[in-house]
Image (cartoon, rainbow, N blue to C red; front, side, top):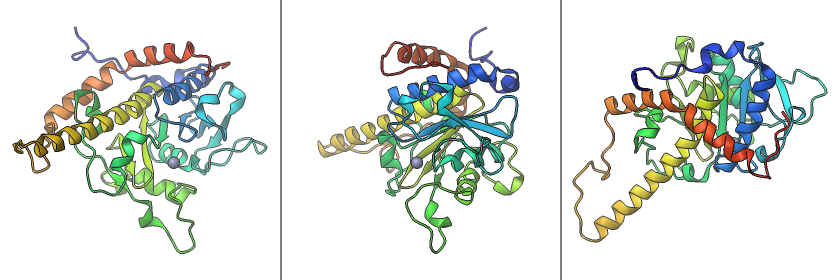
Length: 288
Ligand SMILES: [Zn+2]
């Protein structure tokens, strides 16, 4: 039986059985992988839900992800309001509300990643060009990637720096993952939400899934941009547009769905490679 007819079961269903110490170590590794692949630089972050207490999530404190090295660097927050479990906890990220509100609305989500990856920025820069899956590894993007515009939820007196710095902004972002937010949020409809003039956020039922989506969103964006560049060059040289109005032949919905299933069946493989890469680089220390 091949991977397509028997995709690897997601670890999400077994999340509650996993050892929190092991998951903390894996979370540190994930911080390093995301840095090594340019998903995060000094900014951007990843969190996980506590496996034995779904009301708590865990993410690193106010530091660059590449430098996270020990469980002492991690902070536990309450899902209900993103306050720290330990009242004496060190400083955390102002954008932790991205994570807290997504965990609060979607009980099936166990890992959240937020990024400002450079390759994705053209698609959040208010040009109107949509991010689309251009190859099979990005089927998880779906036929439409929503764009969250924080400007629509600003109220008078809000500092307009695009940061998701409170629960109200976080709630609005979390709602963008659902086609019908009034339905009670049983599960998200979208795996990635772009954030206008800011970046993107993705998630998974486990760390491997979320990391795969974060990295391949970036790779897909880079490929789409280069596709547009060669398309433009071809037209300048006298070629003629034969595809859609924008010169891009998108994948069909059936193709996207088939690729999405394939993605979920194979994403444990790159994780093992990516983890081995960072374990062999001196910059990254994992004492978890
Ligand atoms: Zn941000």
